[in-house]
Each structure stands twice: as C-alpha cells, then as structure tokens.
Image 1 (tube, rainbow, N blue to C red):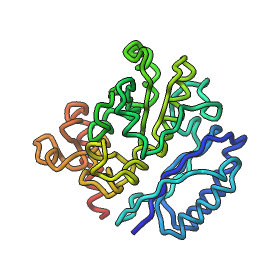
Image 2 (image 1 turned 90 degrees about the vertical axis):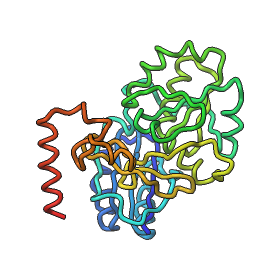
Image 3 (image 1 turned 135 degrees about the vertical axis):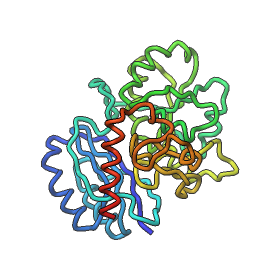
Length: 291
C-alpha cells in the first residue's frame, strides 16, 4: 500500500524559486511522486510513496519557513496514483485571483469534523460547497448549496450575484482538504460577512473520522489522482476518469454510446470537435502501444 499525503500551508516565501530544486531532489531521492506547488503565498500538493519516503519529504517541508506546523491528511492507495513527481512554481497555490485575500490575516472559524453535523443542521446556517461543479456532482453534504462553478476563480463573482440569498444566515463552507476554504472564508470576511465557518481538514478529514452511520455526506469525494474518488474511511471509490475532459465517470457512463475510452464521455461528447476526438484517439493509441 502507498501512503497518499495531501498538504498545504499558507506562509510567505520570499523566494519560492530557491525552494524548488532542493524539494524536488528530496522527493525524487525518496521515490515520492505527485505534485507540489510553490508560490509566494505558500505550498500546496498531494504526494504518494512509501511510509519512509513520505516522511523524508515531510521532514524537509517542515524545515521550510513557516511550515513547522503543516498539517497533512493521509490515505492509502493499492497502486501508485501518480506517474511522476512535479514541483511547480505558481502565482497562487490555489487560484482565486483576488490579490486582497490573505488567509494568514484571518479565516473563518474552524469546525472539527465531529461538530460539523450539528452546525450544518442548524436552521440559521447556509452550507456552501466551494468545489467545482464536476466534484459536487459525485458527492456533497446533504442540503449544501452548489455554486456550479467550473473553477475556484469564479467563486467571488458567484458570491456577488447571490449574496442576498444568505442575508441573516451564518455561512458554513467546505472543500476537499480545506485549502479553498482558507481563501473563501477570508474573502467573505472581507465582504463584511460576520459569521463564517469552515470544516477543519475538509471532506477528507470528515470521511476519515465520522462513522458512515452518523454521516451527512452523500456520494463520493473527488480526489486529484488516479484513484479518482474516495468514500467513508477514505476507501478508494468505484469511479474512473474520462481522459478527454478529466471528469469522473461511473460504470453507467461507460455503457453510454457517447463514451469512448480516452476520447469522450456523456459529459464532454458535445464539447469537443471531431478534430479534438481524432487527436485524443491518436493519444490513446500511443498510450496503448506503450503499455
């Protein structure tokens, strides 16, 4: 079994480009694969490897400026869920395109997984899922509002258009691992919303700690690796990925006439041209020959 570690930390890096090479070297030497993003605002990523390999990388990360207390959410995978290690420099570790947003200044109140059900069951609380539409489609908390955004950068515009719906409500927000809520709750505080909460550790921590028979979560949680999704207990789900559009697909989707492995699925069939599909088929053919 491989250990899969999801982590993030908002902390100022004066020269993130200087951190890239040493971090990549440690990861490669430890046999770890996955993606790590570095930006002036901090670090974000998901990596997988042996227990020893993950610990070596985490030791290195905890020695970086401001990262000594970084939290890591761990799960397991039977097969290595990544093909290689990528350490990338970015403008933001999660893209919101709101320069005034600063999670190191203030965020919403953290709510532990064991207290989440009580909060979102309160009649004066509005629950908002901050993830993208394709993530929400396969699972979310009962009664949560879906902003139907295709990227996190669309959230501020959605809020501006819908904020009157939440007048007089306390706002509870959640995402996969917690990072998007660090920014979205800071954004709402900056917009004058007073009572803002978010799920500590995100959906992953909730699925790890809250028993299924007590859970208010329905469906599966999308993860950004070859496992595609996880369920309660962070057990690997039964979804696959359409490599035409990178959306999750079910076994029923594969029986649809619009599904073609590596080319299209019911969700994206009408979104791509014949030329796109021909290009995807050639890519799929090359992959199959190299297998």
